[in-house]
Length: 224
Image 1: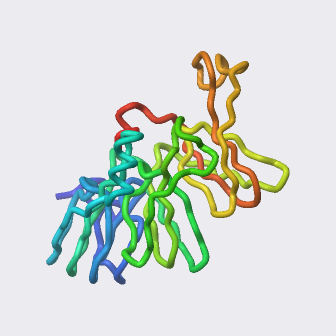
Image 2: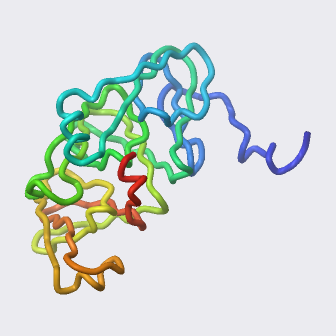
C-alpha cells in the first residue's frame, strides 16, 4: 500500500535503546527492559514479552481520592518489549529528573515514568482543606517522567518578590522550593475564567517555575 499514512513520519522504527522517548506529539514509547510505571488505561499498543500489573495507591492515594475525587491509578509494566502510551490525544512531553530535582505535578498530567523515580502524594502547603490542588504528586530521584497536557503548556519563570497566580484547574506542576498558598479575588471573580462569584488561584512565590496548561479542567478530566 501507498499513501501519506505509510510515510516515515508515521512508521514506527525499532527502538535504539531502552527507556522513554516521545513517539510523536500525542504518544510516548517506552522500550522496557525491566520495569516502568504508567497510568492505568494509558497503554495503546505493545509488543514483546510484557506483563501488566495494577499498582495500589496506598493509604495516601485512597485518602486523596476520598477527599478530592482525584487520584493517580498506576500499573507496573515488566519484562522486555515496547509499549506505547497516550491519553485522550493530549500533547506529550518527557522531563529528565536529575538528582536533587523535585517536581510537583498534578496527577491528571502524569502519563508514565521510570521505576527509578520516587513518587509520593503530598498535601499542597497553604491550600487549606478546600480548593483544587489539595493533593499533588511529588517526583524526585533520577529518571524520565512522561507528562500529558491539553494544548501547549506555558512554563512561567518565578522570581523572588514577583509571585505568580495560577488557576487551580490549569496548573500542571512546579519546581521545588516554591511557597504555595491560595489567593482569593472575589471582586474580580466575574471577570476571571468567565465565571461569577469568588475566584481562587494558587499563589506561588520564590525562585523557580510553574507549568500551566492553556485550558481549564472539565469535570470529566478532574476524575482522571
